[in-house]
Amino acid sequence: MTVATDVVPGVALPPYRLRASTVRLFRFSAVTWNAHRIHYDAAYARSEGYPDVLVQSHLHGCVLLNAVLAWAGPDATLRAFGWRNRGIAVAGDELVVTGEVVAVRDAPGECVAKLRLEERDQRGELCAPGHATVAWPAGP
Image (cartoon, rainbow, N blue to C red; front, side, top):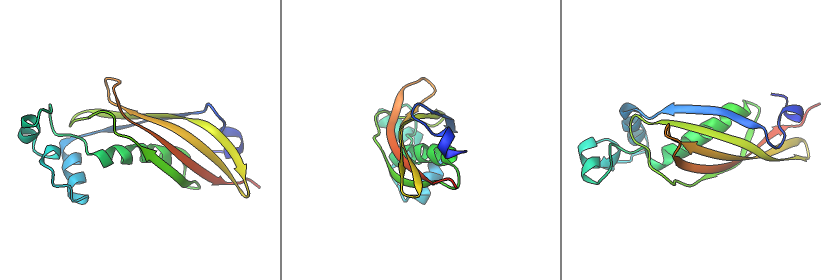
């Protein structure tokens, strides 16, 4: 990516997709020490009123962040990131992150972009809106 010419307000991030499999949810619970049964025990999740095991709150954040980093490339530095969980996703759902550049500014030695992000499921339901700020070294 050529930051000076390619990153301007209105540029859309390519869709980033992740399938939330039961194995992925189990492993994410294990590595984050999240022992809540709604994330790995389908019968328990149903007893709590959910259709299946739930995607973890922090996994939504990871999916959004991975979309930003995949788009920004290895020369980018993440300066800020945040999200809010607004809807649930369950095992088998495909999570799709989209976003766009909302502002770009030059700073000493770098180019900085602010991004607006959305993570939706395959039905188009909003799971997690977010935002990020990314910086790249200024060109020669």
